Length: 130
Image 1 (tube, rainbow, N blue to C red):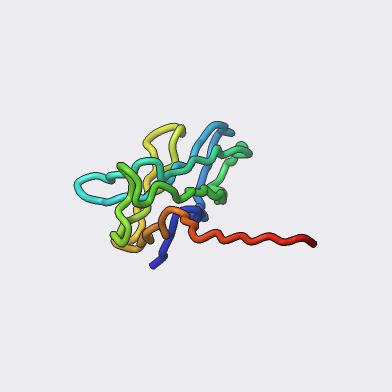
Image 2 (tube, helix red, strand yellow):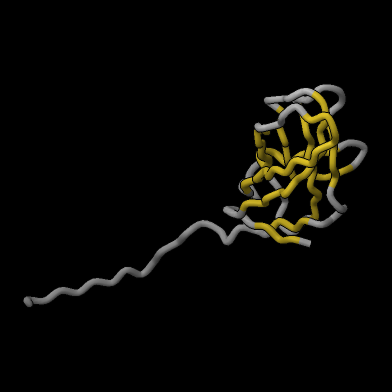
């Protein structure tokens, strides 16, 4: 289980296998949301990484990449509900054939309520000849 708050970044460490012709432009896309009949993403809590360096591979080769999801909009209009439980979702897209999907464990991510708006009060000043 992981707890996140506004300003955090959730980094996904991913691996996938490839064989065949070199490929450029593949993307890893990650988001946080709720898995029901389909995956319902939280508005604005996602990230994308473009995959480069996939070479001609006659055999299956494992590649690794990361994708970061900046956390924001918790408690904001249309955003995540603080204290609720969410899941993660990553897909490998812009590839030949079907997209590749990964779903994280259910109820594995908690989003923490923001501290609130910054406030100040009671500024007092006196002065004297120095």
